[in-house]
Length: 104
Image 1 (tube, rainbow, N blue to C red):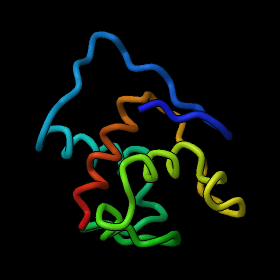
Image 2: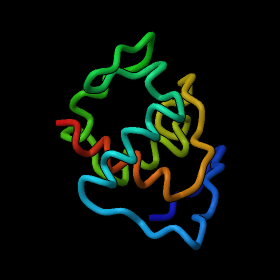
Image 3: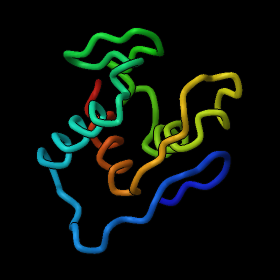
Image 4: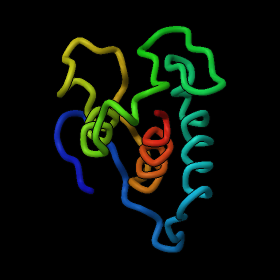
């Protein structure tokens, strides 16, 4: 999925790394959610936030496309948000979204 607009800083995937599937992809997304410091503001399973919306049921509320857009260009959805635009490889974004989709 390609997302454009706003402060987009999504980088191309490294060609040598194939996409993980299933539980491995979800585990990678969970790790990346922590590595990118998303847990600083958002509560998910096992994480306590300091600010930001609780995401424990985000996978039930938002489509993959809406989640991706929100992460890549949050100001396009909520102009006054303090959430920064995602700045990382497309593959990392895909893993994070796969993880968030499991939060139901």
